[in-house]
Amino acid sequence: MEETHPDQEKLCPSIASRLAKKMGVPWDTLGMGELGPEDFLGDPPPQEAVRRNVKPYLLAGIYRLDAHNLREEKMRANLKDALKQFGNVLGIVGFVHLGVLARLFEADKIPVTALLFTGPLIVDETMS
Image (cartoon, rainbow, N blue to C red; front, side, top):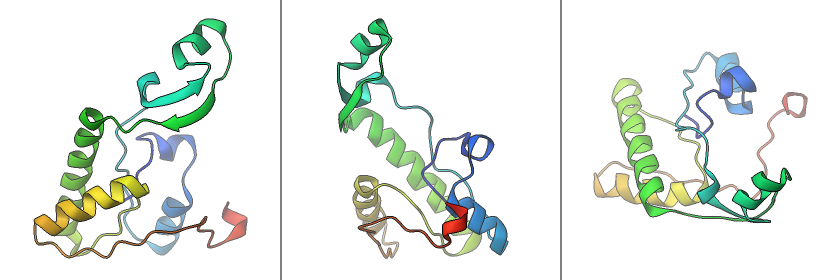
């Protein structure tokens, strides 16, 4: 399972989904849709950029507790469902969600091996 846009497969399949298909392994998205203008700081600010019809320079993402609590609870529920169905699950999420989900699963007494990649993971350059 991978944190991607819900329409990722239609728009541009990820490397993980391509590998899963190639290996005959189930793949599904953990994504919940588009981020809104309130989810990042930009220069100019997002609302001004829309008004001026310019692309803002991304300065930082904003971790909004209300929105991300919902995202992480949905991810957790989907991962738990997949775990019941398959017995083990590889969940590919961003590093902030990784820490939150690892603690939630630990609280549920579900063992987790959290892997944090410090660089891009390219298995096959021809697929990137």
